[in-house]
Amino acid sequence: MSRFEFVWNTGADPGVAFHRPLAPAGYHILGHHAQGAQGLPSGPAVAVRAASVYDDEAILAYPAKYERVWPDASAVGNETRGTIWRPIPPLGYRCMGDVATPGRLRPERKEVVCVRETLLAGGKPGARVWENRGSNAFCRITIVSVVPADPDEGVASNLFRGYRHPSSGKSGPPRFSVLTREPVAAGEGEGARGESEPTSAPTIRNGD
Image (cartoon, rainbow, N blue to C red):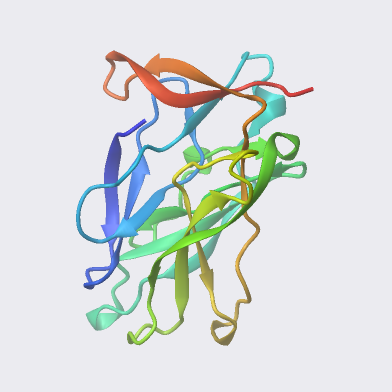
């Protein structure tokens, strides 16, 4: 899945830009994509669906809510260009990526899905995408990619996580998780604009 829509960027150089993956019909995204402010997103994203509509409720779940991680309020006049949000999963599930919105908009609850934790492998912080060290921002944030702790067990999904530093009232990176390889099978879906096309979006299969 390689189609994205632009959400917002910091406007700085070097800076960071956020994009929303466009999932094929019937699929769900796991989070948004972040990269250097220049250019289009690099690499495909992953979207998911349950193997059966009867499994959907047990395997996938919408977040219980979203918590604000960081607003870019460093612009002139304290205007907020955009905000980073963390989806909070219901009990027994995990959310894998953060979400970006323009201004101060809160994401729709169904923007992303969480995955049953038994179908996930351990993740870790990958490359540092951006950090606002040295800027005039009122709080420091680091944005990193999400990668498998063990590439043989987990699937990279081109997601990001942002975390504020202890001096900004928050401590440490969040928990990182990725899809496990065992219950995931490549699928085929309908393109975001209606045409039928192959896609790298996996179908999550019940691993029980």
